[in-house]
Image (cartoon, rainbow, N blue to C red; front, side, top):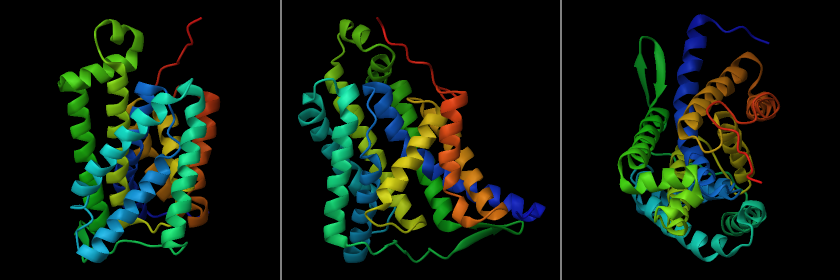
Length: 295
């Protein structure tokens, strides 16, 4: 175990906070889907990796900047999410219980297709600013992480504004709180579920684009990323976007700190530790509520 100097400690906080913002975007769609549909989309990690591969291809063949590619991937994933929910998940009996199996199967199918097309070679998008960094008071701010953090917060802010200040957002929040009451108030909860799932997948597209410039990835990476995002939403509270943001920033910092204090190989275990610890001590998470089944 190594005790870091004050300078290294602050630098680690900076790096952890920046990557934590990207983690928050990755997890926001997953927790939003659970909040409305009470469904855990196990294929979320696979869609993150799919978004990263699409970003990679757009950059390789059309020289489209990874951030600009978000404007392409988000609408595509939104449409795909709408179709998946309307014509697959909505047809499942007891979706809250069986959707995990269906989305798990979908994740395996996506991983298999990506493995067939791209093989297992790790890839990463490397725009011209990949190695650039902004220096402030001797502290280093990597440009890719700064851009990723800023883009993630902007998208999360837009998501928050939609949920808080639009009629659609109010319908989503009403469906989250009580689906039956929302139906009695005239809200088409099936359409709201489709929109929410589509919105959740569109954030996965953006998260995948940002992932591609920060980390290397291959098809099997989806298992690691679904584990990380699940850990974030469990710690933050299932269905809580503010909770996901707090949890992501916390875990991002703890991951970076573990890589410095202990070893880089142990840093991913931080997510699993917090997942098990949260389930034992506070199952509803930091900002979540205990879900009671009505008898």
